[in-house]
Image 1 (cartoon, helix red, strand yellow):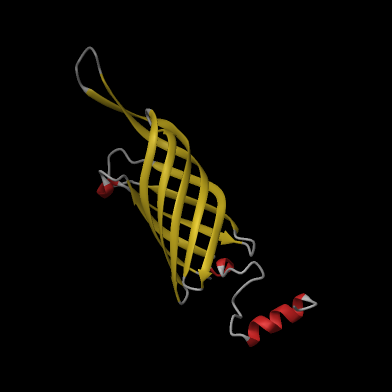
Image 2: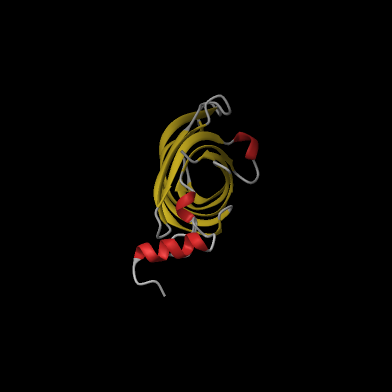
Length: 173
């Protein structure tokens, strides 16, 4: 058993596990800035594209934020900002399992039928919610590919259960 942290680092290096942190994980190797696309299970083609970042600590906890929009995909366009944190574990240098909890803020389109004319009207409303997202990350060199399964509650013109799939392509700077 090494007596000092420097001895532990030397022991890990001599056994070939130089990337393994003291918690027995490679999770701090998965920091990345990313581009993403997410959409609902039934209408994935009408989803949101965006940018974001994840910053992992050696303990496995991480901070993440992202901005997404769907301008040009649906009319009128909508946007979302997500911010939160979570925990991840990487048993190998190339794979990590994560769980994050995000607050969601943005705009959504609420559709209403005008009772006088029978015409469908749309208006932009403030959207908000909370999401839990279990996910997986695969790392190849400096590139990080991710899949998240977002589940939660949101008000986006109407209150209800929220679920979607997010695909990310990140780069570890």
